[in-house]
Amino acid sequence: MKRTNITAESFLPAYGLRSTHTQSLINSSGLRRRIVTKRSIAMLAAEQDWTVDGGDGVRLLGHYSRQPGESRGLVVLFHGWEGSSRSNYIVAAGGMLYERGFDVFRLNFRDHGDTHHLNTGIFHSCRLDEVVHALQDIQERT
Image 1 (cartoon, rainbow, N blue to C red):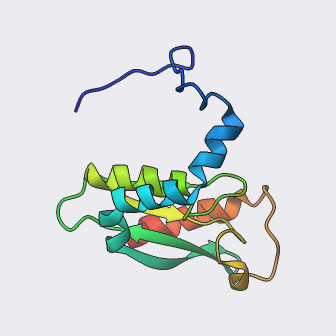
Image 2 (spheres, rainbow, N blue to C red):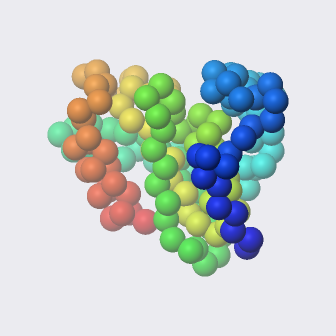
């Protein structure tokens, strides 16, 4: 695999795509979703929905895509503040990693994606212990 080193200084998007706001809008577009879905079809076809233990009765939803043969390892992907395991950037990264031979687990944080029904409490960014506990559960089960 050819390795390309891209730095913040060397990255220059095409004219019309230099605004970070424009880049965010395009990434969230339906066209981008169709492209990402097509490129990630193998990972999406292999995915299994898992409810994982976040400790203290908390349940988190994730999507596990296991390689059909030998795996190069497990990668767990976390989404951003308003994202989910189905966000374009998470699916795109997961699809690329899956194609390169890794098992992929895309984890939703509490109340992200379609998971509001799983827990009674609300999400806030200090609930990192839930994610750590979920990682332990994922590690034990894979």
